[in-house]
Image (cartoon, rainbow, N blue to C red; front, side):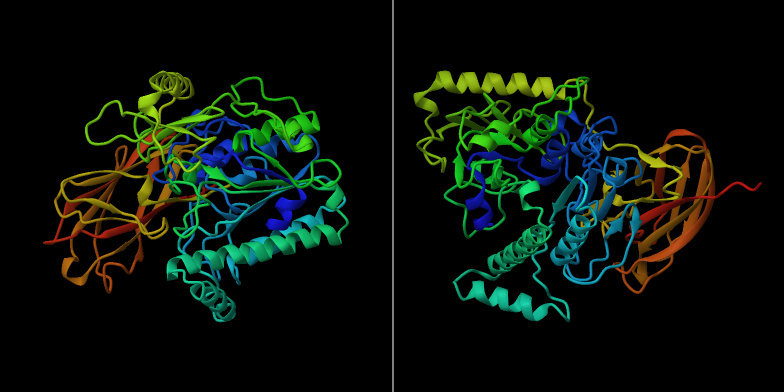
Length: 534
């Protein structure tokens, strides 16, 4: 990473969003994520609207072969997947993170689940290198989106990888870091090793002079050990939550060894690529990114932005909680506390105080007023006409004959019913102990017809015997809950078949009868379209 930064242009005020999916939406579209319908990292809110145009789609108009290797996190269902959003090749995962870094079991290749071996960072780099080799004689766009160093913090713990992982962890423990931080830095060092492998492959293929290489991150850091003097970290509006590395190298074309202090953002890449390749920008929607090609070429210059904006709330976008706004010198930060409807912003002079230590709001009320007014104007603009709720899950698309409904996409009602997050594929709807409690999924049925229904759940032996009902429209299925060895061991059960009409419907799971305790820990529901008989 140091060599890449030293041989290219290092942007010192480059901004992402506070968390991952919003940044990725901005990167792909050149638009602030709130315009795309995406608003969350879970609960179905991590789905980018179907109407959006991606970098990959635009590059394909110039004959580029496009590949994504790693984390997507912009939609998991048919119609929203990378191979349907402009990428010719996709190996990676849809969710915000995966649980197993060694021999990962949550990967898909162009929409189909695959089995893999090895450590995830090595594996993704291998796929990217193979993609580069395969397309060495044509234009290509390779988006290598490492999931590390996201939690869980694991560095090669498999049978064949543990010696390397342990050695790296010991290296950082010896420097006085706590175990959590040592694991993170071991993961970062493995990324560094793999970046070196990728750059070496580009050199070996004599492609360095023809290839733009960009390195960045999707949010501020998670380590508590080193913050580069910045305040805060991931998920915060402070500089440590939104300011990220950004290095770009193109030998002979971009400045070498330059540092650019001008503000830039992840949304600027789409218009930059379009200017470089003379691709017309989409004219049917507002773009928030601006080309920074001149900054890359010259290694200096003014920011194309008057302001940079940040906001994120996990459940409902709002202009009051966890937001910030920067101009080229000052930054206003707002954090809602208690019942405070309009938070008092804290003001910082980033030129003299990049660590945001000295709140100067009292000395400059006119700047506070200007920045807050601008933020409210912007927020109203980017949220205009948007409805932030989970997308209806498409059912019956030919390319996805089996659709999986996960607990995080449900809305649930009842006094005791609960949603437990355990890493997407292991989430549950649980604790429902009263008849009438429900969990519902909104479906968008593309093809009407008969569908098989299967559920996966766990149930402690002492609670077995309750009744679950699934209903959609006028169709209803009932199932007597069976015991599993313990509540966190899930078995699959076929409930039967239902006929579903075309259009949007709610699939509702209801506790009809409980047996003195938790009905079940509902892990997943599958709908499989039954082909009609000729």
